[in-house]
Image 1 (cartoon, helix red, strand yellow):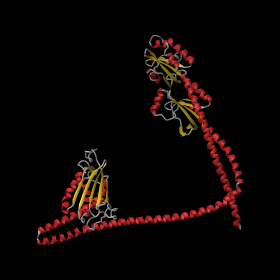
Image 2: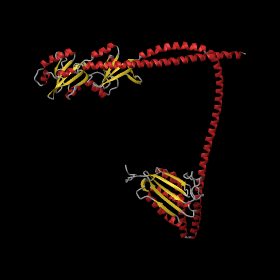
Image 3: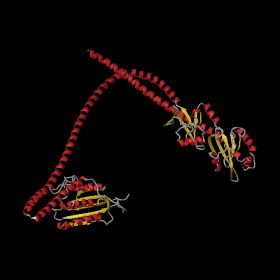
Image 4: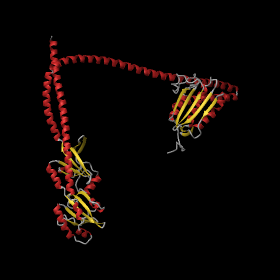
Length: 600
C-alpha cells in the first residue's frame, strides 16, 4: 500500500519536471530565435547606414582635396612663375604672390625647378622656409616631371606637418621648367570626423592609418609591415614615426567584416579611393547590436514564459492521457531495443565464426600449398640424391678395380645430377626474388624469333605445326629484361607442347599485334585446354596440374611476376575450338633510342 501511494507522487514529480523542462526549452528556443532575428535585423540596419555613411565621408574627403586640384594648374600658367623658372624673375617677387594664394586657400604653396629644388615658397617668412630644399625624391615631383598631375600624402620633410601634396608641371612649348606644388592640410577634415562622434579611418596602400577620428590609431598599421617597407616609409613619407601594428582581427560575415581593433569589435565597411590609392573605413561599434539583443531577450523571455505557463496549465489533463500513451510506447521501444540487442549479439557471434572459418581456410590453403611444394621438391630432389649415392658406391668399386674411365663417366653423371638439382633450386630462387635485372629495349618480333630458334629441334622432332602472325621488326618495342622475357615465352611454348602431347594434330600458333599504346603476344595450342578447377589457380605459386615429379608449379607464377614488373598483364583462357590461349599485354615504348639504364 505504501509503495502504491508513492508511485502517483513520483509521477506528479516527473510531470512537473517535464513541464518545467518543456517551458524552459520552448522559452530558450523562442528567445534564441528572437535574439537571432534582432541581431540580424540590427546588423542589416547598421550595414545600410554604414554604406551610406562611408560614401558620405568618401565624398567629403574627395571634395576637400579636389577643390584645390585647380590651384597648381592655374599657378603653373602664371607668367611670373614661368619667368622665375626661366631665370628672368627673382624669388622675392614670386614669394609674396604665393603667400597671397596660400593665405586665401589655407594651404602651403611652393615652386620647384626642373631639378626638384625649391625656388619659391609661400612660407618664406617663417623659420620653416622651404627655399633651397630639394624634393626630387617625392612621387609628386616625379609624376609632374612625366607630364601629369601628382598627388601624395606625406609628413612634410621640413615642416614636419602632414598634408596632401598636389603637383602640376610648368611647361613652356613642351619643355619642362619645373613644378608647382600645393600642400593641403587634412586636419580640419579629421577634426570634423572627431566632432561627429563616428569612427572613420583612412589607410594607404600599405595599411597605414594617416587619417583617423581616433587619434590613438593615427600612423599605425592595420597589418604587419616588413622591416624594409617600414624603414622606407619612415624615411620618405612618415618621417620618423614608429608605424607600429595595431592589434587587429577580421572575421567575414554576411553584412561585411567584423573588425576587432584594440579589443573593441566593429562592423567594418570600406570603400576604395582608386584616384589616391587609399581605402576609407567606416566602423560601427557592435555594442549597439548586443544592447538591442539584450533588450529583445528580456522582453521575449518574459512574454514567452507567461504564455507557456498558461498553455501548459490548460493542457494539463490532456498531458496525463498522452503521458500514459507514451509510457506504453516507451515499453514497446524498450522491448524492440532488447530484441535488437539480442540480434546484434547473434550477428557478432556469426561474424566471429565467419572470421574464424576464414582464417582456418587461409591456413588450410597455406598448408595445402606447402604440402604440394614439399612433395614436389622432395620428389624432384630424391631421385638425383638416390642416383648420386649409387654412382658414389660405383666409384668406390671402380677405384678398387683401377678403372679410371668408368670413374670419370660416373663423375660426369653426378655433375649432371647436381646441375639438375641446381635448376630446381634456381626456380625457387627466381620465385623468391622480386624484379631485378638490366632494363633494356626489347623488340618482341626478334625475341619470338630467338625463342623459336631454340625450340626448332623440338618442334621438328614432335611434328608440331607452327603458325606465326607477327608485325615488322621495330614496331613492337617494350622495356624489360631480355632474359626474363625469353624465359616467359619459353615457359608458355613448353606448356603448349605438354598440353598437345595427346592431341592427334599438334599445333602451335603465335600472334603478335600492336595498337597505339600496347603490344599483345598470344600463344595458342590445340591441347586439352585448362580445367575450370585450375583456371582460377593457374598463376598461384606451387600450383600444378601435372603429376609429382613433372614440375614444381612455379613457371606461370614466375612469368606472372616478370610481366607484372614490366607493368604488363598475363591472362589465360580456353579456345572455343579446343586448346588454350595465353595472352601477354605490355606497354609500348615509342621513339626511344637511348639506353634506359644509362640515361639521366
